[in-house]
Image 1 (cartoon, chains in turn brown, blue):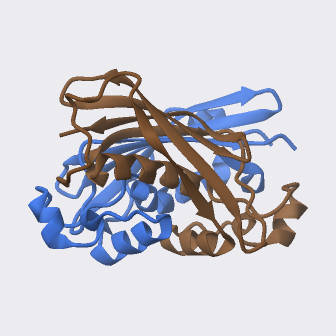
Image 2 (cartoon, each protein chain N blue to C red; image 1 turned 60 degrees about the vertical axis):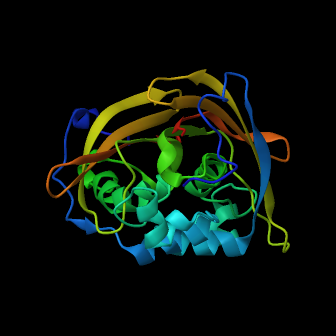
Length: 144
Length: 147
């Protein structure tokens, strides 16, 4: 998508920081993601079961956390089709309490390398309450 | 019970065809808060050079999920599903999935490794159109916690 705020390859260099974002995740979001993705694992919506398997509370789908950090990239690039490579390690669960507020996921990213084909490599960080919930999160994004 | 390492290198039968729909893409985009018009407005997607609305990058997990479950629930593989957590995930996209794509996915078990009291199971799932065009490679690592 062409818009005035999309970054250009020519003006993007190693060290360029993407504007950090915060995403709120509530129980409602987990239910909605379960339905949209087809992942109905009980630990993502049932506190009783989550606690019975040793979790502190209901946790977000790892794939939802990955999707939020992906959205961070697509909002920056202006085009969801621009993300040609994207990988993460799930290092800690995002615990989502039933308090009407849920969890806050803070996402940031830095360009690490310019690649051929107008692509750039980006390192992404995602944290909840200061704990890294994604590590080794890297993406390759094609810019205009 | 340990995961059966005889399965390393095994490639499973391709999935049944999955048809990517505009409605499912929009539902998924809503669920992750992806605001792009390219996921909802066909004219906007076509103006950007795509045949139809495109899926967000992690939508590929929806396409591969049913097939992956068939693999990891194979009793002979010996995965204790109650003890599984998602360790790592990656996608390499040759192009974005778009509405109207009819795709099959096929999974290969890349590795099974003990890590302390845990075992990691890494699968590679390739998504291609029914016409044979490669679209996406998804690599997934599941971690079975020790009992």
